[in-house]
Amino acid sequence: MSKVSLKIIIAGRTYPLNVPVSDEEKVTKAAADINKAVEMLRKNYAVNDNQDLIAMSALQLLAKASGDNVPVAQAPIDYSEIEEALENLSTDLDGIQ
Image (cartoon, rainbow, N blue to C red; front, side):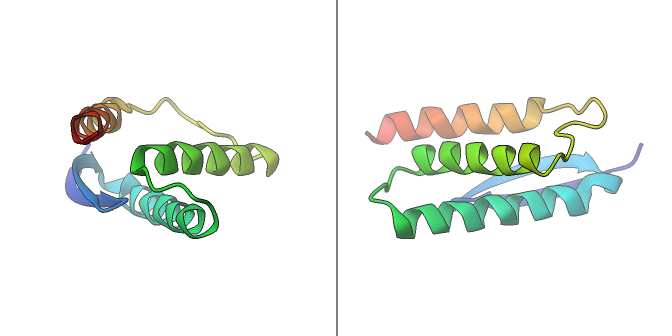
């Protein structure tokens, strides 16, 4: 399966990802949705911590997807690169505090 390299920006941080070409649009849209949710939360609540905003956004987006009866995972997906990027973000944010 052919892969494409992407640089996805979430909450101001860049995450390099290699995803199957067929998933490029989905991943790009997901990042845009996360960023919209982060900005909405930042404007409406007194929360400035990016880690908190990302976690709250993820919760809202998955709750909405579940409420719309959209299957969260239609096929097994390898999230290891995303998990690694989130771990790195968490470590970096812990170092800032």
